Image: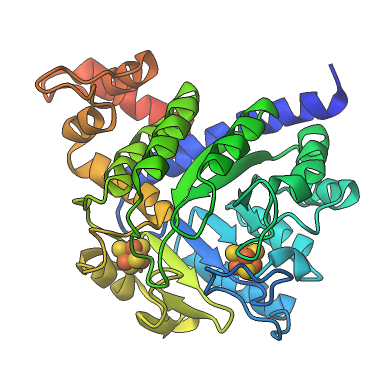
Length: 378
Ligand code: SF4
Ligand code: SF4
């Protein structure tokens, strides 16, 4: 057993406990952000044809400014911060930013195109305490739409499989601007072979809205979901329900909590609902208060039914679970057949037994409270 393998296992236990605490705290109170995206640099070293989130000229945001933003997010009670861009690895002091996130007890995720990863850079990310890294891979061979290709990035993926102590998720995409839908399948298979997590996204237009999939793309999407189900989890089950509807061009019935449970902080330090709805509410983070969080929690977003922003779907899962736990669990794990009972995995049944007792069952209520204390949830 290698030293890296052992460290990875130890860190994965720590990560799981923190994730469980994040969910438990989110279930306990709706009044703090669960995930915030921050942008340390808008510049990118690539120019994907579908992307509206980069430029070629911006300077990095000064590190003290980023540190101040992280402190403000910590004050609002943010549980997890995702660093996006542009390409965040172009920020010269990214490690200090990650280190500061971790020092505030917040989970740190990095979204990167992977081009600047080297074995030495991966080890620096380990030392900074990164929890998760996500790479989105669009095709097998680079083309004029995207250079985020398996062919170019495979060497980087092998380095990650060997050296990374953090969890790695490979996201593949299907959609109109991706020429060969089978590419997403090849990306997923490679990710699973290397022991990574794998998700699939549906490519959106410049407003984050759905571009319907054709029959072949729907088949590919269904096959990827089937492969990913082997790693079934709460998040994956929920995510599937959203994605399955979108793949068929159908709307989702959900309440987007962007601006409250999910924040997008641009390079200028303004809070937006998400990367695709910049300008709303467009308030400086310095002035963002509990009243803003509470107001945006209630605001109905007209873009929600056909929204493809999966990280916001996932965050909303927690509020839906809190409001209607039993109905939501049945929806997550629906068997697919009319009137058939939900297909709950054993561990979901065990958690429901501890945390969702009938009103009259005092012993189980005490057990649930003890479990929360064990997780450090006050
Ligand atoms: S790598 Fe990411 S940020 Fe850069 S252009 Fe492509 S999609 Fe946009
Ligand atoms: S529904 Fe929410 S996450 Fe989706 S585009 Fe609208 S504001 Fe953004």
